[in-house]
Length: 114
Length: 116
Image (cartoon, rainbow over all chains, first blue to last red; front, side, top):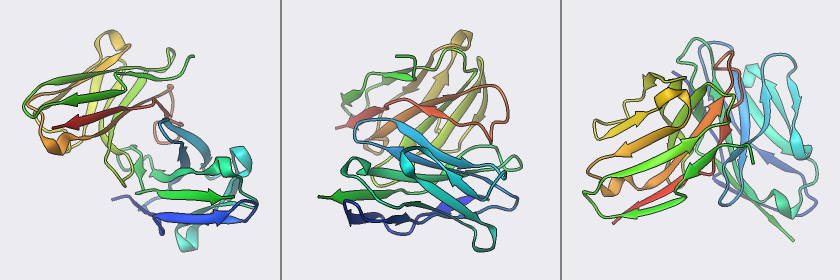
């Protein structure tokens, strides 16, 4: 069965700092991995996805994530965050061999402080 | 706006009442999903439609829940005899034809249900 863990339910950083949001997955086959962002009172928006083409994936708004098979991880980073990055971030996994449905992690709330 | 829309955005109801939510997907998307999101958790899959056919249901979808997608366009999710445990955000998403596991899902803003 697939599952996703996100270490750290709440992360606070200062504006301009680097941020790392953790995602670890379990999957019996090579997965597809996604990061979504949810701003207050809005739906989820795709930041980036890993589909086996390249292990370092660049997304929107300056975010990137690196797939590490040996660590079963897909951590999200941004070198310099802005106050507008304050939101909830969700990691999700899917694969063709297990239901093809997205399984989401519990999310990490990012607060960017002035 | 050509994104996924959901109506209503908020619903407050009393325990035991029936409620119905509507989702309008992106027009060219033939796949539609319903999720439930409780506070502090990620979205949990409820059910999936390809065109008008409901192809998959999670065991989270008890017999009080029913979903339809007549004519393969908009979808409705009905909860009968609501319970306080049904209080959650109900999210709808749609995706285009192609590899289901690979394609991005586009989410609506959600319907927040509060059962008193």
